[in-house]
Image (tube, rainbow, N blue to C red; front, top):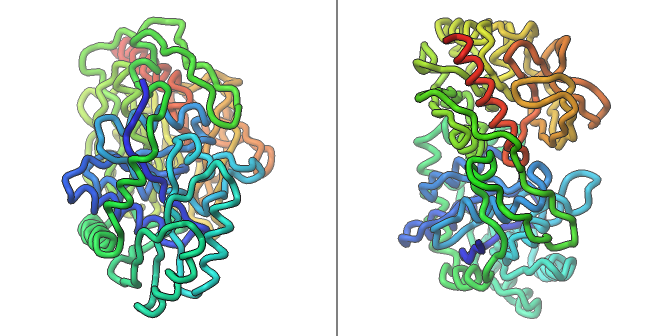
Length: 484
C-alpha cells in the first residue's frame, strides 16, 4: 500500500537553529486550521515528540534509520501518518549529520530521501546578512537527491535585517517561506541535550506550543508550505502493522528496494502461532513524569502479541495494576524525582515482589536505575544488586549490541542496535549474566539478566525486532501459567 500523505521535513544547518520551534509551530498552526497533522521526529529523541503530540493531538513518532534499518523508515512513517492530511517531520542535528562514522546513515537528509520528502531549511540568521545566500546555496547543492524546497529565516532582528536577507537569497533559487523574529516566550528549558519533557511541565509546555504556533502562523506562508508538502507525491511500499509484525496475520511481502541501492532486510516471519494469552493478561508500563521515554510501537507490539497494556505512574501509584504479569520500565529522568520514587515504598516493594516471582521485567536506562538498590543514596527497588548515581559525563551515542545471556527479550547471540543517553553511572555496570555486549566506545558488557529481569542502559526500538515483544508476552504467559 502506498502513502500519498503530503509531507515536509524540517531541517537546519546545525543544532540550535530553531528546528523544534518551527516544526512544532507548523504542526500547531496547521492543526488549528482543522488539518489532521501527523508528527514525526528523526532519530532516537524521546522528548520532542511530546511537544509534537501537544501541537497535534496525535502520538509523536520517531523515524530512525540506524535503530530500525532504512527499510522500515517509510513503512513506519506510513503507519503513523495513516488517515492524516499532512505530516511534519522534525530533523535531528544538522541536515547531513548522521551516525558517527556511518556517512549519511540516520541523518535528516537520509530520512528525507527515504520519504521522498521536500526539506525546509531553518536558518538562524541572527548573526549574518548576505552570507546567508552562500550557506543556503551550499546546503541546496551538496546532495542533488535532497530537495531543499524553501527556507525559514529564524531570529531575524528587524525589518531592515529581513530586507537584507531576502535580497541576498533572491538569486539562490530557494524561496523564503517564512521569517521569524526573536521571541523570548517561545523558549523552552532544556536538560542535557534536549528539552525538559512535557510531562514535567505540562502547563508551561502547552503555553510554549501555543506561542510557537502563533509565531509560525504570523511569520510563515502556510499556503506555500502546504503546496510544497503536496508536491511530495506518492510513497510506494508497505505500511507497517504491529499485528503483521508479530505474526498475527500472514507476513507482508518483501519490501521494495530503498533509494541508495541498499538491500532490504526481509520482514519478520514467525515460526510459531500467536501465543494463547489469558483474557486480561496485563503488561504494566511505567509512565508519568519520571518515565517519559518510550516508543509508541512498543505498546502496539505488546498489544498485538496478546497483552493488555496498562500505564501506571511510579510517582503516584502505590500498587501495580491488578493482574500485572509483566513490567516494562522505560527511560526518563528518575534522578530528578529520586526522593519521590524512594518515598513510594509500597510500589517499590510491589515491583521487587513481582521480580522475585520470576515475572518478566524489561527495564531501560531510567528503569535500570529504578531497579537498583539505590539512586544517589536513596533506596530504590533493590531488584538489581547495584548502586546508581549522577555523573558529570554525558554518555551518548548509537550502539551495536549482542545479547550475552538468554533473557525475556532475546536469545544469547541475538544482535540489536540501540542508543545510550544518560548522565548516570551504575556500579557494577554488569551482572553475573550481562544483558549486552557492545563495541562502542570500547568493547564491554553491560546490564543485568536474572530470573525474568532484563535491565540495561541500552534503548532499543522493538519495531526492528518484533520478536522481542512476542517473546516477552510468551514469557508473561509462562509466568501466568506457573503462578496459576
